[in-house]
Amino acid sequence: MAILITGSTGRLGSALIDLLSTTTHPLLAATRRSRPPPSLATHPTVHLDWHDESTWITPFSPPHPPITSVFLLAVPGTTPQVRNFATLCASQGVKRIVFMAGASAVKGQGMWAHLDQLREEYGITYSLVSPCWLNENLLAERYVAEIKQGFIKSGLGTGEAPWSAARDVAAVSLWALTVEGEGPENTIVAGWERLSGVEIAETFTRVLGRRVQHYHLSLQENVEYLKGLGYPPGSAQLVAQIEAYSAAGKLEQVPYEDIEEKIGRPMVKFEDWVEEHKVTWL
Picture 1 (tube, helix red, strand yellow):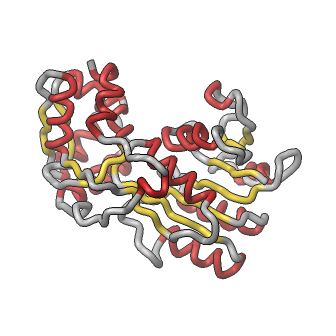
Picture 2 (picture 1 turned 180 degrees about the vertical axis):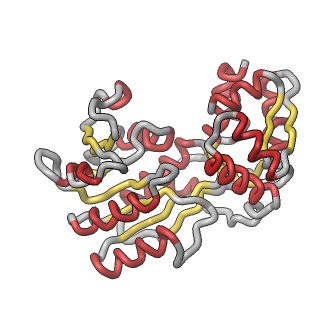
Picture 3 (picture 1 turned 180 degrees about the horizontal axis):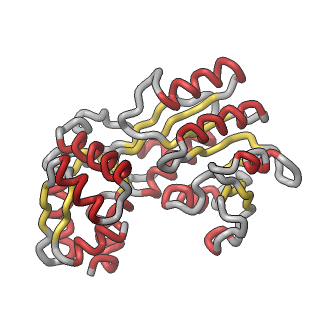
């Protein structure tokens, strides 16, 4: 009886695998690479490519153990595939699906509605794990380059939103995968700490001991800036819209969730996380 992890080489997937490795729960890491990367060298793996439907049945075929739970993470452009794969999982006897969503997920829409349908048809249980902003976004090459030069450009503005470390989101995901009974349909990863783009820059200023300034971009300015960084037009538009949503204060009212009770420890404070990774931006 194993837990299948998709997105296993990403920041969230790899953090979840690290946590699962400390438990007695067997895991199976899905990777689109035919030859597993070094990061998965000590873990059982299976080839699964969202764009090659013939690989989807592989995790449910010998010699792999029966899959009872699945962690689903959709990369951009794969939402239809992930929805269809979830249906396959249910048809293959999977009992629980944990889907990495976002704080703007709405009951009755998108993947949430599809999981409701699978519960009715197959009797699965499911849980959405919904972070707002991930600290590890700031480890991306574009942010590292900006912060080293003393600035951050974004559309985040002064709207405050919850930021979370990947290991906290992974810990919530592990809890959702292993909790007894049905558990909640949706867990928003949101502690008390809320930060704006300006406050993020101020945190970097304190930790790095030098000035880091936030430059707010309008929606269209942000789209053009991201395209200039090499983002495909569609991705640039999507990121800019999400940042504008946050800048408008839409995430300020995200309800506090007692994440610390679920994961059994305090959540990582943003400033402590920056301190932990400060060498990246020096």
